[in-house]
Image 1 (tube, each protein chain N blue to C red):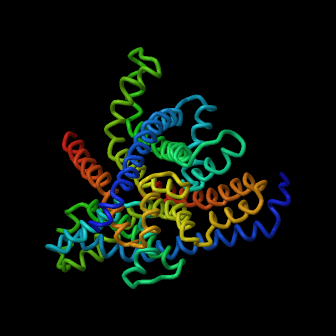
Image 2: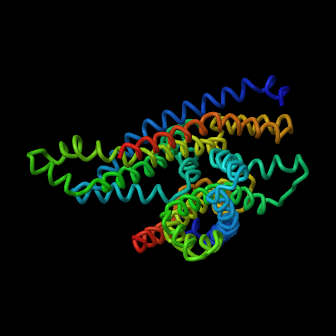
Image 3: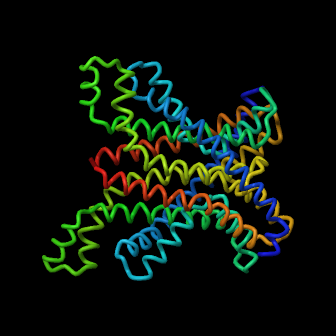
Length: 216
Length: 215
């Protein structure tokens, strides 16, 4: 096993290209799913008749499915009913669907954790219902939501590896290509791939811990 | 859809059973490993603590797929010839046990420190206090997040499909590529997963409410 050869600049650059795609998919998905998750979580918090219940059921179904199945759905099943995405956007939309459901639960939980008296206080000072939510409830809820949202982002980074199955050229996919060509590169590739994921995820989970500590 | 079920129902059922068996085995072992590692994470022995922390921090931050692929690709090359199903179960156990260890650690640390001191001062040893005083209280804190880990485990077992692991997702993929009816097949697979995960989720929510009501 020749380490210098396995870790040649060409190979490392190929892995880093993969990492970049991994991060791109993860960042785009977390942004989209934060927006969608916030809307869904807010609707469920506001207890709108029928709508909140309906969204609750959809969120429960999506949350209880494997992400891999949702990736299969967006890439292989949706074209059957005429919706076609590229590989990249299939991956992003699958992650967004799954993660929106996860985040909406976190956001709803965060909103519910704000004491009821805050709503009453807001209303009695003359704020409307929406004003109270926007200026009083959300700012307080955001602080308690941030740590779980960051840890959700960690799982998102890890979960992008599943998009290998639709040949998204992310980190795992690229590592598999390299060790597929040289069997002697298998162990160096696993070490490097594991290391790259680990660095990103460990840094993010430390950030989550720090946010949690500052919240307490 | 009915047509699909009558021709391929047996295959899906086989995958469903394999997924269930794999989940139960992985759950059993990851509970044992996870609890042990979680307890070691709060132990006084610096070496044991460091080792347990390293285990958790390593596997918490690496994708499950990479761990499973490692056992599927590297293990047969250097150690022993194992199939995708076994590689999947080993990977899933290692990955999940890291999460369970974190949950258990948080549960133990959630029990007030005075409880340990009280136990020790009544003459219990460290392990006796752990066994009879700390763990029974920690279990209450730990149950809701553990339930989430179980559900995640079932969902995560779908990565078996990527190492020919003969699970539900694998057969679903096989049927889809044979019939070209991707939409129908994946909907079917989704229903099979929901049969396991939805009752689990509702049971966990119920248990959480019961525990909260008792306090």
